[in-house]
Length: 273
Image (cartoon, rainbow, N blue to C red; front, side, top):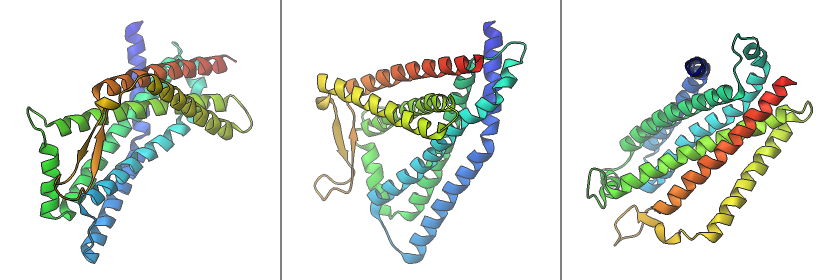
């Protein structure tokens, strides 16, 4: 039975990934077009934003690509709601856990691929645009406090990227939950989905602030500056301390599991009706 469950999950995951393939290509084409446009404007107008300016621009492009993935996740529940009869007439019906876990994995796969390629494309465009001293400034920042295989700054960036990916997964789970609640109503389904999504995030935000007021993590955080400490600062990055980061991961994963279980429960109850 466990093998059959894994096989069904793998089959659904492949189907969901293939369904997202075309729009992923369009997203990457959009990112490539934005980078090409920015590069053309900079080359033709001979304007410059500096290292920090292009860092902000590249972040906006990558986050824009992930935002498109986030928006697309809202429609997955709608399509699943239309197709659920196909799952119910199978010899071994597929439960809500398999359905939504498959879609969550597919969305995260899309986010990872689109985000990584977008970052690479944007990084390449920025590298061609920046002046030599700006490139050297970035390398100096990344190599700062190097005492092992990775410098402390690079290690912190990887940790924050991992935490960001977990937070993105949590956001998608809340999207699924909100969409399922919205689809349970025949009227104003979209409005209800939006309201539930906002209220869920507000509730999580209040819970996070409540915990922060009890546990003080301030001493663990640190700020790293991009530039010469003796000169005018051109940018900075604030890193979370390890205790705060670990708590954030456990809290995010825990709340995500609760929302996921609530999503599958409501979905299966609705299908049974």
